Image (cartoon, rainbow over all chains, first blue to last red; front, top):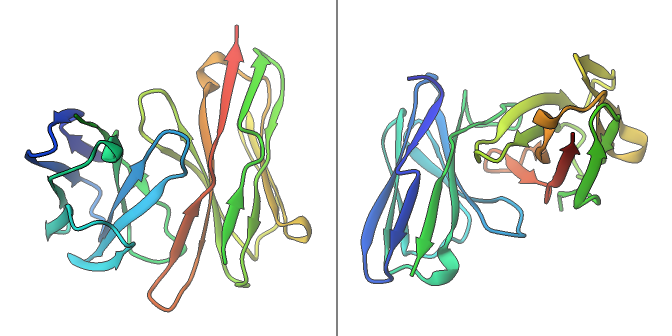
Length: 114
Length: 116
């Protein structure tokens, strides 16, 4: 596979469930990102990992918990979510973490919280 | 504070028309980067172009062209002879350094519909 892949593509979960989103990049990049895209809102950066270390956490509720076991994989663990957390969750990667690097995105996971 | 504005929420054109998508940005830094991304209905954002703040040359890639003007803080995107496959949401983004590494901010996007 090439590029950035995300699984699952669609997820429906209840507010008491625990689930995880998975992202894998096949580009040899050192930085990975989680974004949230809600209807009628700009893309919101949630977390950034550089060389497997979290370098940015933009005031995201603790019900979202990221994990980066290596530079190719990124997870987003979800628990006790709210209906307003329903959104498209996008993973991205870049060569390194810095202002000059473009990001490459996966297809996203469409999450619905019921 | 940095900000990206895309004033056009939605644009509809008929195939073969030219269309320009506007992007205006704000930053206090002298070194920064501007990007355009395309998001087709499939959801995946596709990188189109990166431009650094010291390079004001316009760029052309096939039917796509970009006009970067620092004097007006704009980085506009033109599609010539639009096609139905160009229908997507287009995002302009700004990246500049901060004490922790970088700020990366997306504009709200412009939804382009190209009608046959």
